[in-house]
Amino acid sequence: MTRPRPLVQWRPTLRVAGSDRATLMGLAVVAGVLSGLGAVAFRWLVEHATLLLSGQADYAATTDHPSHPWLPGLGGWFVILVPVIGGLIYGPLVHRFAREARGHGVPEVMYAIQRKGGRIAGKVAFVKAVASAVTIGSGGSVGREGPIVQIGSALASSLGRMVRVPGAQLPLLVACGAAGGIAATFNAPLAGVFFALELLLGSFAVGSFAAVVIASVTASVIARGILGNEAFLVLPEFSVGHVSEYAIFAALGLVAGALGVGFSKVLYWFEDAADRIWRGPEWLRPAAGGLLLGVLVFVLPQMYGVGYPVLEGAVMGEYVVPFLLVLLAAKVVATSLTIAIGGSGGVFAPSLFLGAMLGAAVGQAADAVLPGLDLSPGAYAIVGMAAVFAGSSRAPITAVLILFELTGEYSVILPLMLAVVIATATSSLLSRDTIYTAKLRRRGIDLTRHAARTARLAHVQVRELMAPTPPTLATGTLATLAAQRILAAGRSSLPVVSDDGLYVGIVTADAAARALADDDEAESLVVADVSQWRDHIGPEEALDGVLDTMLGGDADDGLPVLDDAGRVVGWLGHDVVLKAVTQTA
Image (cartoon, rainbow, N blue to C red; front, side, top):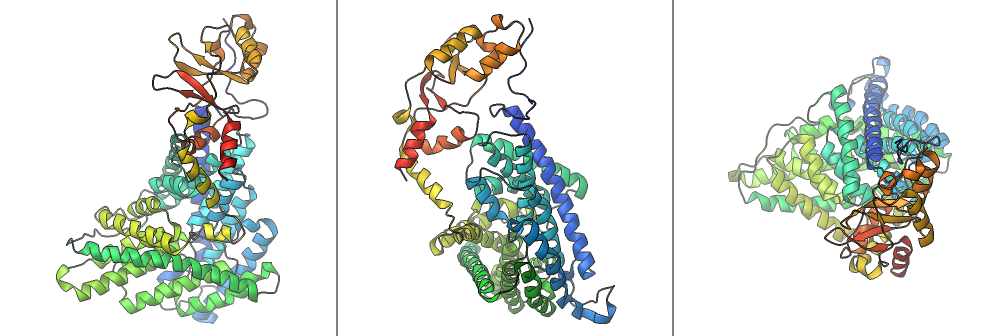
């Protein structure tokens, strides 16, 4: 007997059936490939832009104001003009082609996922890559994580729209691109996964987790194959010698949380000040403001670009406490100024920089005051990095994992977790917003409203809203009879059960009609030939917990409700969920 063509397939319109998990996983792999290659290409762009514009592999590692090989007559003074030149390149580029590429990128991705259905213009990937590479290469004191999140997300969004994935799956695919970008950039696949889940999706649903993991692993494999498999920061092993040190780590977490909030406040104060002061064309703003940045970089070369050599120097104890505090204050100003004038780059690396300066200063000061404890100031620098990031982003799981993967330092995991939790709690007490959501709230966009609304749905159980059990179809029922029963029930699908009454999937009217029309022996087809899987939920589940399941697949008319034995006991439709959501608004 000739079997029908698979119901989940590439069709001439390139539409992907959302119920096919294998297809979604395949797209996650492709998103991982794209974001991994994008991360490698972006890193190459940053390195060569830095070498081209500064004449050094990393100008922040210099201390003697070296001259540019092409401009020896200017001596070290040339660096004052470098941000101006960079601004003349990326300012018009961003203004003309993709204004959403301005700034640190992560808020734009959060907004696209939660409010725009994951739609990000493909040109954003190119514009963001070039603009951010030029910004960092010309001295902009920003990081690479924001750009690669936006680059990976834009590539994944373009992929999803090209193959026309169902709208509910596009945000997940975008998160896959972001996870792959983080994983490939920092050689941190776990951090990439949790960055996407914790910060972008705000959900740890099983279906989301699997796809994001696949994308992250794929991107990491590609990056490791091209760039090698070394920890992003190579540091000696540190240890906590005495239990009393945990009190110092707790205090560090408290201060780090406040610093994370303060960093966010200063950054947006600079943006407001630049908006008030600048009256010229927007495309010229980066070049004009670049002069101020150039002066700052000339005074403190450590502020040039991302600044990882300086961060490592702080961890290794190369700077004294007063200079560490100078570097901390200068980094806040340099990053805020770079973003305020229209630069393109992330705030993750600056957060790590601030944390390293703060932690090293606290560790050295504590060691001087309490010499008997034999402290390791470097351990405090590592913990400070995670704590300040947690304080600014309020993403504690990501903060712990990314520092562990960046440094390979498991020996300080306990104080790291303690400080991160305290920093996150402190940040929550001091500010309503994170450094990412604050940018959106300033535009009148409040992403927390959705979270508050779904939190109220936690008190509503599925059994309170589900409809009675719809008619079921046995696996041996003829497909022609199944189509008639679906029409008679006035539904677009019916659940399928085995001979012993256990749920095995559904049959949709569309699937049955296509199979009957396409197969030469349609009269002999049975339900088992045309059925497909659809996720199910339980009657005791809270409504907020099933929203991701309802929105994450091709469940146009709702989801079957199963008891513990696997039998269909009801049906939850979108209409009743919509009513419940609007009533809690």
